Image (tube, rainbow, N blue to C red; front, side):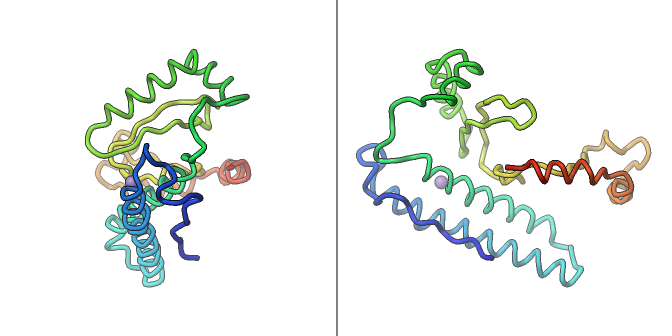
Length: 197
Ligand code: MN3
C-alpha cells in the first residue's frame, strides 16, 4: 500500500500570522510530497531487490528509506501538532508528567526552545516518551534521517559496532550477522511486537 500525502486539517493560511500561507503551501505540497514519493520509491526498489535477491544497492535504498520515511512521518506529526486554535498549555496527565520529568512547564519550554534553536544546520527538536523508562525526553535530530524513521518501536536490534564482534569475527561482520540469527529470542521479539503501540 503506497504512502499518500495527507491533507492538512486546516487551510494553508490558518496558522497566520505565526506561520505564513506561502510557507505552508510550499512545505506541505512540495517538500512533504517529495518525501512521500521518495519513500514509495525506496520501498518499491527494496521489494525489487528482495525479489531479485540482489542487495548490491541496499545501502543506498536503506538511506533513501530513512531519509524519506523520516521526512514523511515527522511531517505527518508536525502538521497535526499545530492548529489554528493552538497555543496555551498542556493539561492533565501530560502536564503532570512534564512537571515530573522537567521540574515545571516553564523549564520544559526553556529546554525545548534552547534545544530547537541549537540544532546545527537542518533538523528537528522532539518531545519523546522513552519506551524503556516511560519518561519524557527532549531530543534533537541533525537532519532527520540518519538512518532512522523515528516513529518506530524497536523489536529486534543488532549491534554492528566493531566492539560487538571484532574479537571473534574481526572484519567478517557478515559472519557475525549470520551467527546472530542462531541466538535470537523470538519470544522476546514477539512480546515487543504485541506491546508496540
Ligand atoms: Mn520540513
